[in-house]
Length: 70
Ligand SMILES: [Zn+2]
Image (tube, rainbow, N blue to C red; front, top):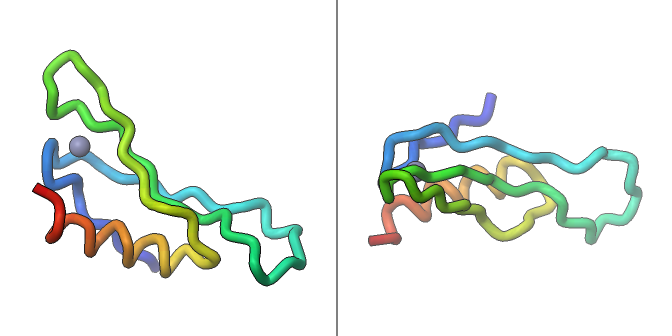
């Protein structure tokens, strides 16, 4: 089970997107975390991580990002 921290700005949920899993290319990076942030009131901002090979790596990037971002 992959745990994703809530958004540091609005407390909202982040979502994990994975590739279709049918690619055999080991270099394929199609896993990332995406979040639609509404910390700006009526203005929504899409926040996403870079693409990674595995959901675990993407989750790690998201969870780490929380500590780094202002
Ligand atoms: Zn947010």
